[in-house]
Length: 436
Image (cartoon, rainbow, N blue to C red):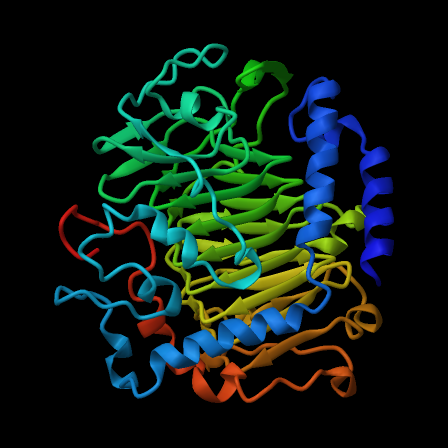
Protein backbone atom coordinates (compact mmCIF):
# COMPACT_ATOMS: atom_id res chain seq x y z
CA UNK A 1 0.00 0.00 0.00
CA UNK A 2 1.43 3.41 -0.95
CA UNK A 3 2.03 6.23 1.48
CA UNK A 4 -0.74 8.21 -0.24
CA UNK A 5 -3.26 5.46 0.34
CA UNK A 6 -2.07 5.04 3.91
CA UNK A 7 -2.51 8.77 4.43
CA UNK A 8 -6.07 8.73 3.15
CA UNK A 9 -6.89 5.70 5.26
CA UNK A 10 -5.32 7.27 8.32
CA UNK A 11 -7.28 10.50 7.80
CA UNK A 12 -10.57 8.69 7.41
CA UNK A 13 -9.85 6.65 10.52
CA UNK A 14 -9.28 9.79 12.57
CA UNK A 15 -12.46 11.40 11.27
CA UNK A 16 -14.60 8.46 12.34
CA UNK A 17 -13.03 8.08 15.79
CA UNK A 18 -15.62 7.49 18.45
CA UNK A 19 -15.19 9.24 21.84
CA UNK A 20 -14.20 6.02 23.62
CA UNK A 21 -11.07 5.86 21.46
CA UNK A 22 -9.89 9.37 22.23
CA UNK A 23 -7.54 8.23 24.99
CA UNK A 24 -9.37 9.83 27.90
CA UNK A 25 -10.22 13.12 26.15
CA UNK A 26 -13.67 13.97 27.46
CA UNK A 27 -14.17 16.80 24.95
CA UNK A 28 -12.38 16.73 21.60
CA UNK A 29 -12.09 20.51 21.35
CA UNK A 30 -10.30 22.74 18.84
CA UNK A 31 -6.94 22.39 20.61
CA UNK A 32 -7.00 18.58 20.50
CA UNK A 33 -8.28 18.63 16.91
CA UNK A 34 -5.27 20.69 15.87
CA UNK A 35 -2.91 18.32 17.71
CA UNK A 36 -4.53 15.33 16.02
CA UNK A 37 -4.07 16.87 12.57
CA UNK A 38 -0.43 17.72 13.29
CA UNK A 39 0.16 14.21 14.63
CA UNK A 40 -1.36 12.66 11.50
CA UNK A 41 0.94 14.70 9.28
CA UNK A 42 4.00 13.78 11.37
CA UNK A 43 3.10 10.08 11.26
CA UNK A 44 2.87 10.08 7.47
CA UNK A 45 6.23 11.83 7.23
CA UNK A 46 7.80 9.30 9.62
CA UNK A 47 6.38 6.20 7.92
CA UNK A 48 9.11 4.26 6.09
CA UNK A 49 7.90 2.52 2.90
CA UNK A 50 10.91 0.15 3.06
CA UNK A 51 10.95 -1.05 6.68
CA UNK A 52 13.35 -3.94 6.08
CA UNK A 53 16.06 -1.43 5.20
CA UNK A 54 15.70 -0.16 8.77
CA UNK A 55 16.07 -3.67 10.17
CA UNK A 56 19.19 -4.24 8.07
CA UNK A 57 20.78 -1.06 9.40
CA UNK A 58 20.18 -2.13 13.01
CA UNK A 59 21.55 -5.58 12.25
CA UNK A 60 24.69 -4.06 10.77
CA UNK A 61 25.29 -1.84 13.81
CA UNK A 62 24.97 -4.82 16.16
CA UNK A 63 27.32 -6.92 14.06
CA UNK A 64 29.99 -4.22 14.35
CA UNK A 65 29.70 -4.24 18.15
CA UNK A 66 30.01 -7.98 18.65
CA UNK A 67 32.60 -8.86 16.01
CA UNK A 68 35.32 -10.81 17.76
CA UNK A 69 33.48 -10.88 21.09
CA UNK A 70 33.56 -13.98 23.24
CA UNK A 71 30.09 -15.45 23.56
CA UNK A 72 31.14 -17.51 26.58
CA UNK A 73 30.73 -14.34 28.65
CA UNK A 74 27.02 -14.19 27.94
CA UNK A 75 25.98 -15.98 31.13
CA UNK A 76 27.43 -13.32 33.40
CA UNK A 77 24.29 -11.46 34.50
CA UNK A 78 25.91 -9.44 37.29
CA UNK A 79 28.90 -7.36 36.38
CA UNK A 80 30.97 -5.13 38.67
CA UNK A 81 34.00 -4.50 36.49
CA UNK A 82 34.91 -1.54 34.27
CA UNK A 83 32.28 -0.01 32.02
CA UNK A 84 31.09 -2.25 29.22
CA UNK A 85 28.79 -1.10 26.43
CA UNK A 86 27.57 -4.31 24.89
CA UNK A 87 25.20 -3.09 22.18
CA UNK A 88 25.41 -0.28 19.61
CA UNK A 89 22.99 2.09 21.36
CA UNK A 90 24.92 1.95 24.63
CA UNK A 91 28.29 2.09 22.92
CA UNK A 92 27.34 5.48 21.53
CA UNK A 93 27.30 7.15 24.97
CA UNK A 94 27.70 4.98 28.06
CA UNK A 95 31.40 4.59 28.65
CA UNK A 96 32.24 8.28 28.50
CA UNK A 97 33.19 10.02 31.74
CA UNK A 98 31.70 13.27 30.47
CA UNK A 99 28.22 11.86 29.78
CA UNK A 100 26.70 14.24 32.37
CA UNK A 101 28.22 17.33 30.78
CA UNK A 102 27.23 16.12 27.33
CA UNK A 103 23.82 14.59 28.05
CA UNK A 104 22.40 15.50 24.69
CA UNK A 105 24.78 13.11 22.95
CA UNK A 106 22.18 10.48 23.88
CA UNK A 107 19.96 11.85 21.11
CA UNK A 108 22.50 10.63 18.52
CA UNK A 109 22.30 7.04 19.71
CA UNK A 110 18.85 5.70 18.88
CA UNK A 111 18.50 3.03 16.19
CA UNK A 112 15.54 1.31 14.57
CA UNK A 113 12.28 2.93 13.58
CA UNK A 114 12.64 5.66 16.20
CA UNK A 115 16.07 6.58 14.83
CA UNK A 116 15.13 10.19 14.00
CA UNK A 117 13.97 10.97 17.54
CA UNK A 118 15.95 13.80 19.13
CA UNK A 119 13.63 14.75 21.99
CA UNK A 120 14.58 18.07 23.54
CA UNK A 121 18.05 18.23 22.03
CA UNK A 122 17.47 21.67 20.51
CA UNK A 123 16.14 23.14 23.75
CA UNK A 124 17.36 24.22 27.16
CA UNK A 125 17.83 22.06 30.24
CA UNK A 126 15.05 21.96 32.81
CA UNK A 127 15.91 20.56 36.25
CA UNK A 128 13.12 18.92 38.24
CA UNK A 129 13.73 19.57 41.93
CA UNK A 130 10.24 18.97 43.36
CA UNK A 131 8.63 15.49 43.29
CA UNK A 132 5.15 16.76 44.19
CA UNK A 133 2.13 16.66 41.87
CA UNK A 134 -0.57 18.41 43.88
CA UNK A 135 -2.03 20.82 41.32
CA UNK A 136 -2.67 19.35 37.85
CA UNK A 137 -4.42 22.51 36.64
CA UNK A 138 -1.60 24.91 37.53
CA UNK A 139 1.54 22.78 37.93
CA UNK A 140 4.21 24.16 40.21
CA UNK A 141 7.49 25.22 38.55
CA UNK A 142 10.22 22.70 39.30
CA UNK A 143 7.87 19.73 39.02
CA UNK A 144 7.89 17.15 36.26
CA UNK A 145 4.34 18.08 35.24
CA UNK A 146 5.32 21.73 34.81
CA UNK A 147 8.29 20.71 32.66
CA UNK A 148 6.49 18.44 30.21
CA UNK A 149 3.72 20.90 29.27
CA UNK A 150 6.04 23.71 28.17
CA UNK A 151 5.83 24.81 24.53
CA UNK A 152 9.53 24.82 23.77
CA UNK A 153 11.85 21.80 23.43
CA UNK A 154 13.35 20.82 26.79
CA UNK A 155 15.92 18.33 28.08
CA UNK A 156 14.51 17.45 31.50
CA UNK A 157 16.81 16.18 34.28
CA UNK A 158 16.47 15.65 38.04
CA UNK A 159 18.38 17.41 40.82
CA UNK A 160 18.28 14.34 43.07
CA UNK A 161 16.71 10.92 43.51
CA UNK A 162 12.96 11.04 44.05
CA UNK A 163 9.69 9.15 43.93
CA UNK A 164 7.00 10.95 41.95
CA UNK A 165 3.41 9.88 42.65
CA UNK A 166 1.36 11.31 39.81
CA UNK A 167 -2.14 12.30 40.92
CA UNK A 168 -3.38 12.23 37.29
CA UNK A 169 -1.89 11.00 34.01
CA UNK A 170 1.18 12.97 32.94
CA UNK A 171 0.58 14.47 29.47
CA UNK A 172 3.84 15.05 27.61
CA UNK A 173 4.03 17.60 24.80
CA UNK A 174 6.30 17.38 21.75
CA UNK A 175 10.08 17.76 21.71
CA UNK A 176 10.84 16.63 25.23
CA UNK A 177 13.50 14.37 26.77
CA UNK A 178 13.02 13.01 30.28
CA UNK A 179 16.52 11.97 31.34
CA UNK A 180 16.78 10.14 34.66
CA UNK A 181 20.53 9.49 34.54
CA UNK A 182 22.45 10.45 37.67
CA UNK A 183 19.42 10.09 39.94
CA UNK A 184 17.21 7.24 41.09
CA UNK A 185 13.82 8.40 39.80
CA UNK A 186 10.64 6.38 40.32
CA UNK A 187 7.24 7.11 38.78
CA UNK A 188 5.20 4.95 41.14
CA UNK A 189 2.00 4.35 43.10
CA UNK A 190 -0.06 6.79 41.05
CA UNK A 191 -1.01 7.58 37.46
CA UNK A 192 1.12 6.85 34.40
CA UNK A 193 2.63 8.71 31.46
CA UNK A 194 0.68 9.63 28.30
CA UNK A 195 2.20 10.73 24.99
CA UNK A 196 -0.85 11.80 22.98
CA UNK A 197 -0.82 13.47 19.55
CA UNK A 198 2.80 14.42 20.23
CA UNK A 199 6.09 13.85 18.44
CA UNK A 200 9.76 13.60 19.20
CA UNK A 201 9.83 12.33 22.78
CA UNK A 202 12.62 10.46 24.63
CA UNK A 203 12.08 8.82 28.03
CA UNK A 204 15.26 7.39 29.51
CA UNK A 205 16.46 5.96 32.81
CA UNK A 206 13.26 5.85 34.88
CA UNK A 207 11.72 3.22 37.16
CA UNK A 208 7.99 3.03 36.38
CA UNK A 209 5.93 0.70 38.54
CA UNK A 210 2.75 0.19 40.54
CA UNK A 211 0.78 2.48 38.23
CA UNK A 212 -2.96 2.65 38.93
CA UNK A 213 -6.03 4.00 37.19
CA UNK A 214 -6.67 7.71 37.74
CA UNK A 215 -10.01 9.46 37.92
CA UNK A 216 -9.63 12.14 35.27
CA UNK A 217 -11.07 15.63 35.49
CA UNK A 218 -9.74 19.01 34.44
CA UNK A 219 -6.00 18.70 33.69
CA UNK A 220 -3.60 21.16 32.10
CA UNK A 221 -2.13 19.49 29.02
CA UNK A 222 -0.18 22.49 27.70
CA UNK A 223 0.76 25.96 28.86
CA UNK A 224 -2.33 27.51 27.27
CA UNK A 225 -4.89 24.70 27.45
CA UNK A 226 -6.75 22.69 30.06
CA UNK A 227 -9.14 19.90 29.16
CA UNK A 228 -11.39 17.36 30.81
CA UNK A 229 -10.00 13.84 30.90
CA UNK A 230 -11.90 10.64 31.49
CA UNK A 231 -10.64 7.77 33.66
CA UNK A 232 -7.15 6.57 32.67
CA UNK A 233 -6.63 2.80 32.45
CA UNK A 234 -3.42 2.57 34.44
CA UNK A 235 -0.83 2.05 31.68
CA UNK A 236 2.79 2.70 32.57
CA UNK A 237 3.34 4.54 29.27
CA UNK A 238 0.55 5.14 26.76
CA UNK A 239 1.53 6.29 23.25
CA UNK A 240 -1.53 7.53 21.35
CA UNK A 241 -1.36 8.94 17.82
CA UNK A 242 2.27 9.93 18.35
CA UNK A 243 5.44 9.77 16.27
CA UNK A 244 9.18 9.48 16.87
CA UNK A 245 9.23 8.08 20.39
CA UNK A 246 12.25 6.42 22.03
CA UNK A 247 11.93 4.57 25.33
CA UNK A 248 15.33 3.44 26.63
CA UNK A 249 16.78 1.93 29.83
CA UNK A 250 13.47 1.79 31.69
CA UNK A 251 12.65 -0.59 34.52
CA UNK A 252 8.92 -1.32 34.47
CA UNK A 253 6.61 -3.59 36.46
CA UNK A 254 3.19 -4.06 38.00
CA UNK A 255 0.93 -1.56 36.27
CA UNK A 256 -2.84 -1.84 36.42
CA UNK A 257 -3.26 -2.16 32.64
CA UNK A 258 -0.32 -2.42 30.22
CA UNK A 259 3.32 -1.54 30.77
CA UNK A 260 3.56 0.09 27.32
CA UNK A 261 0.71 0.67 24.85
CA UNK A 262 1.19 2.20 21.40
CA UNK A 263 -2.08 2.76 19.55
CA UNK A 264 -4.07 4.93 17.12
CA UNK A 265 -1.54 5.32 14.34
CA UNK A 266 1.54 5.81 16.50
CA UNK A 267 4.72 5.05 14.55
CA UNK A 268 8.51 5.49 14.37
CA UNK A 269 9.01 3.99 17.83
CA UNK A 270 12.03 2.28 19.40
CA UNK A 271 11.82 0.49 22.76
CA UNK A 272 15.30 -0.57 23.88
CA UNK A 273 17.51 -1.64 26.78
CA UNK A 274 14.61 -1.97 29.20
CA UNK A 275 13.79 -4.53 31.89
CA UNK A 276 10.22 -5.73 32.34
CA UNK A 277 9.01 -7.85 35.27
CA UNK A 278 5.87 -8.89 37.20
CA UNK A 279 3.08 -8.03 34.83
CA UNK A 280 0.34 -9.65 32.77
CA UNK A 281 -0.21 -7.62 29.56
CA UNK A 282 3.27 -6.26 28.84
CA UNK A 283 3.05 -4.43 25.49
CA UNK A 284 0.14 -3.71 23.16
CA UNK A 285 0.79 -2.32 19.70
CA UNK A 286 -2.53 -1.51 18.06
CA UNK A 287 -5.68 -1.56 20.16
CA UNK A 288 -8.38 -2.52 17.68
CA UNK A 289 -8.85 -5.00 14.83
CA UNK A 290 -11.09 -2.41 13.15
CA UNK A 291 -8.69 0.58 13.23
CA UNK A 292 -6.86 0.40 9.90
CA UNK A 293 -4.91 3.55 10.70
CA UNK A 294 -2.47 1.29 12.55
CA UNK A 295 -1.19 -0.02 9.22
CA UNK A 296 1.29 2.83 9.45
CA UNK A 297 2.70 1.58 12.77
CA UNK A 298 6.40 0.64 12.76
CA UNK A 299 8.09 -0.36 16.03
CA UNK A 300 11.53 -1.68 16.97
CA UNK A 301 11.86 -3.73 20.19
CA UNK A 302 15.58 -4.27 20.84
CA UNK A 303 17.99 -5.35 23.61
CA UNK A 304 15.29 -5.68 26.27
CA UNK A 305 15.05 -8.28 29.03
CA UNK A 306 11.62 -9.81 29.57
CA UNK A 307 12.08 -11.21 33.04
CA UNK A 308 10.31 -12.68 36.05
CA UNK A 309 6.57 -12.70 36.54
CA UNK A 310 5.50 -11.88 32.98
CA UNK A 311 2.48 -13.57 31.41
CA UNK A 312 1.88 -12.44 27.80
CA UNK A 313 2.06 -9.69 25.13
CA UNK A 314 5.80 -9.18 24.63
CA UNK A 315 4.43 -7.67 22.39
CA UNK A 316 0.89 -8.29 21.07
CA UNK A 317 0.61 -6.64 17.65
CA UNK A 318 -1.95 -5.51 15.10
CA UNK A 319 -1.69 -4.22 11.53
CA UNK A 320 1.85 -2.77 11.37
CA UNK A 321 5.51 -3.82 10.98
CA UNK A 322 7.39 -4.93 14.10
CA UNK A 323 11.09 -5.74 14.40
CA UNK A 324 11.77 -7.76 17.57
CA UNK A 325 15.54 -8.08 17.77
CA UNK A 326 18.08 -9.40 20.29
CA UNK A 327 15.79 -9.47 23.30
CA UNK A 328 16.12 -11.96 26.16
CA UNK A 329 12.89 -13.78 26.99
CA UNK A 330 13.65 -15.65 30.19
CA UNK A 331 10.10 -15.90 31.52
CA UNK A 332 6.52 -16.08 30.27
CA UNK A 333 3.46 -17.96 31.48
CA UNK A 334 1.22 -18.00 28.38
CA UNK A 335 3.17 -16.86 25.30
CA UNK A 336 5.76 -14.26 24.26
CA UNK A 337 4.70 -12.73 20.92
CA UNK A 338 1.09 -12.53 19.75
CA UNK A 339 -0.97 -10.73 17.18
CA UNK A 340 -4.07 -10.35 15.06
CA UNK A 341 -5.15 -8.50 11.92
CA UNK A 342 -2.12 -9.51 9.80
CA UNK A 343 0.82 -7.71 11.42
CA UNK A 344 4.30 -8.31 10.02
CA UNK A 345 6.62 -9.56 12.77
CA UNK A 346 10.34 -10.12 12.18
CA UNK A 347 11.94 -11.89 15.13
CA UNK A 348 15.73 -11.93 14.88
CA UNK A 349 18.42 -13.09 17.24
CA UNK A 350 16.25 -13.33 20.34
CA UNK A 351 16.65 -15.92 23.09
CA UNK A 352 13.42 -17.66 24.10
CA UNK A 353 13.48 -19.84 27.24
CA UNK A 354 10.14 -21.63 27.47
CA UNK A 355 8.41 -22.20 30.83
CA UNK A 356 8.09 -25.70 32.31
CA UNK A 357 4.41 -25.86 31.31
CA UNK A 358 4.18 -28.03 28.18
CA UNK A 359 1.10 -26.09 27.08
CA UNK A 360 3.07 -22.82 26.93
CA UNK A 361 6.16 -23.79 24.92
CA UNK A 362 5.03 -21.95 21.80
CA UNK A 363 6.52 -18.47 21.53
CA UNK A 364 3.74 -17.24 19.25
CA UNK A 365 0.00 -16.82 19.65
CA UNK A 366 -2.42 -16.22 16.79
CA UNK A 367 -5.59 -17.95 17.94
CA UNK A 368 -7.44 -14.67 17.60
CA UNK A 369 -7.82 -15.75 13.94
CA UNK A 370 -8.47 -18.96 12.01
CA UNK A 371 -5.43 -20.87 10.74
CA UNK A 372 -6.31 -20.29 7.08
CA UNK A 373 -6.13 -16.57 7.80
CA UNK A 374 -3.00 -16.32 9.94
CA UNK A 375 -1.01 -18.56 7.61
CA UNK A 376 -0.91 -15.57 5.24
CA UNK A 377 0.68 -13.26 7.81
CA UNK A 378 4.44 -12.69 7.59
CA UNK A 379 5.95 -13.86 10.88
CA UNK A 380 9.61 -14.83 10.60
CA UNK A 381 12.10 -16.23 13.08
CA UNK A 382 15.74 -15.78 12.04
CA UNK A 383 18.69 -16.63 14.24
CA UNK A 384 16.56 -17.01 17.35
CA UNK A 385 17.81 -19.31 20.11
CA UNK A 386 15.08 -21.67 21.33
CA UNK A 387 15.59 -23.24 24.76
CA UNK A 388 13.66 -25.60 27.05
CA UNK A 389 11.38 -26.68 24.22
CA UNK A 390 10.45 -23.22 22.94
CA UNK A 391 9.28 -23.06 19.33
CA UNK A 392 8.21 -20.28 16.96
CA UNK A 393 5.50 -21.01 14.38
CA UNK A 394 6.40 -19.09 11.23
CA UNK A 395 3.89 -18.04 8.62
CA UNK A 396 3.63 -16.25 5.30
CA UNK A 397 4.83 -17.20 1.87
CA UNK A 398 8.61 -17.81 1.96
CA UNK A 399 8.85 -16.98 -1.74
CA UNK A 400 7.79 -13.41 -0.94
CA UNK A 401 10.67 -12.94 1.49
CA UNK A 402 13.04 -10.17 0.47
CA UNK A 403 16.70 -11.11 0.60
CA UNK A 404 18.70 -9.38 3.27
CA UNK A 405 22.10 -7.98 2.42
CA UNK A 406 25.42 -9.23 3.82
CA UNK A 407 24.68 -7.04 6.83
CA UNK A 408 21.94 -9.47 7.88
CA UNK A 409 22.11 -10.25 11.57
CA UNK A 410 21.49 -13.98 11.24
CA UNK A 411 25.13 -14.88 10.86
CA UNK A 412 26.60 -11.96 12.82
CA UNK A 413 24.47 -11.92 15.97
CA UNK A 414 22.52 -15.08 16.78
CA UNK A 415 20.46 -15.53 19.90
CA UNK A 416 23.45 -16.96 21.75
CA UNK A 417 24.78 -13.40 22.12
CA UNK A 418 21.59 -12.04 23.67
CA UNK A 419 22.51 -12.09 27.34
CA UNK A 420 25.64 -10.12 26.53
CA UNK A 421 23.68 -7.58 24.50
CA UNK A 422 21.00 -7.16 27.20
CA UNK A 423 23.23 -7.45 30.30
CA UNK A 424 22.63 -3.86 31.36
CA UNK A 425 18.92 -3.64 30.53
CA UNK A 426 16.84 -1.43 32.82
CA UNK A 427 17.50 1.88 34.55
CA UNK A 428 21.23 2.35 35.14
CA UNK A 429 22.94 3.53 38.31
CA UNK A 430 24.86 6.34 36.64
CA UNK A 431 27.08 8.55 38.76
CA UNK A 432 28.19 11.97 37.61
CA UNK A 433 31.91 12.06 36.88
CA UNK A 434 32.09 8.32 36.24
CA UNK A 435 31.42 6.13 33.24
CA UNK A 436 27.83 5.04 33.34
